[in-house]
Amino acid sequence: MVTITEKAKTKVAELMTDGGLDESYFLRVSVQGGGCSGLSYNMDFDNELRKGDQEFEAQGVKIILDMKSFLYLAGTELDFSDGLNGKGFNFVNPNATRTCGCGESFSV
Image (cartoon, rainbow, N blue to C red; front, top):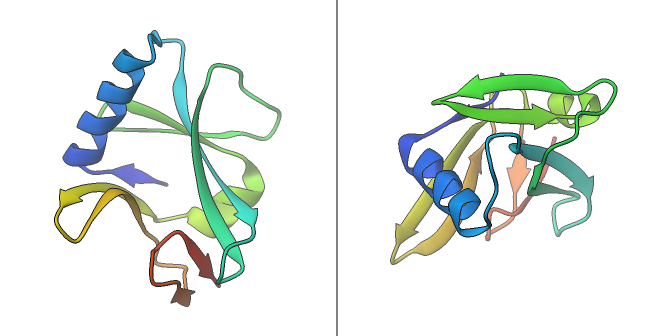
């Protein structure tokens, strides 16, 4: 399961509204090879399910992961920070054994 904080939920809703997206869209979260630690996080809005997708709903936000990404992200919490120490989405991933300084890549 992947969860989302209240702050992240608010930001996702704001981005969907700004992008003119309706309720048929959901948040697709995935993992790709790359980044300074080996794997990097990716987020996008999508409205088409693919074979093998894993579906979750947290705080009213529909979150979709492909099976490969789910294996790396199970138990992850998506947060959003707008403070002075950095602005953006943060992944609190219990599976990550090492993360880079910017928090955008990890390894397991």
